[in-house]
Image 1 (cartoon, rainbow, N blue to C red):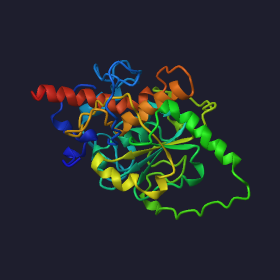
Image 2 (image 1 turned 90 degrees about the horizontal axis):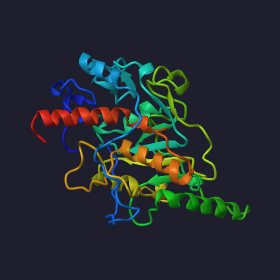
Image 3 (image 1 turned 45 degrees about the vertical axis):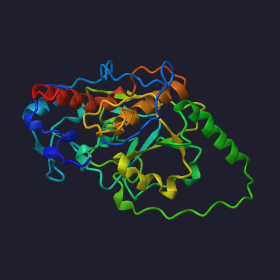
Image 4 (image 1 turned 90 degrees about the vertical axis):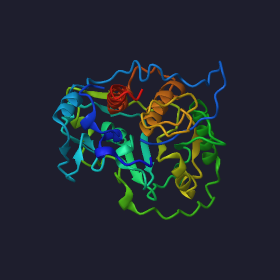
Length: 329
């Protein structure tokens, strides 16, 4: 993410030169996939095919009107303000609201450019269940290591399918621990001003789910995650070269790490020279929830979380059409 944000538009694309047509960044690299196995990466062609999305009429109309000033910070924005986590020139009643079965924490690198990150998509579309923190502000997970996982690849990382029994084993070990055992001293909490949302249920510039049903409706489900003890998932929003500072933080060391092994990115700003298994933040969140539904809850996935990709899909098509028109593809 070395290049600057073009006109501070969503996804860092110059909307002023884009065609008037419809339809950030966490990296989750994988190990090389083996041919003809269950772990083969899922093909990305045609990209984002078959998702059950709310209509993009509102975004098409907003694009025709052009960029507007955010009522809170005054920044020139298209669709939403990534600084204030609020919609701009778009009706909340026409934007889908997604209810997630677990909470999502996104730890954003302080050098990550807001306008280029897709983490804001998750915050706007699932405001009750997504919290964005700016490092070094990290919540305390020490007492909940059997209920929280970190999505990040590498040695010791497990698959989503393996995650459930690993967490259950951790829960059993905690239950079997001696009640007389002294708990480990709690580490000091990071300074709070870095968090986009400091407590569940608080949002900046976005109303709660029950207030946002409207024409798009509320997507997702509210059922208890059955036998899986998982309650919260942590993602890192950063370029790959910036992840070391966050991933080595002692507050994250006790968390079980989960790797997404079967997915390829469709991101239009993919890092040059990196594998196509490095996912944008919103891709990682979406694919994790989809796998969680099918592999952990053992429930059929019927598109409950597809609308997390609402902005992403629109921008994906918009930007790729602009590239085609410019002769860049």
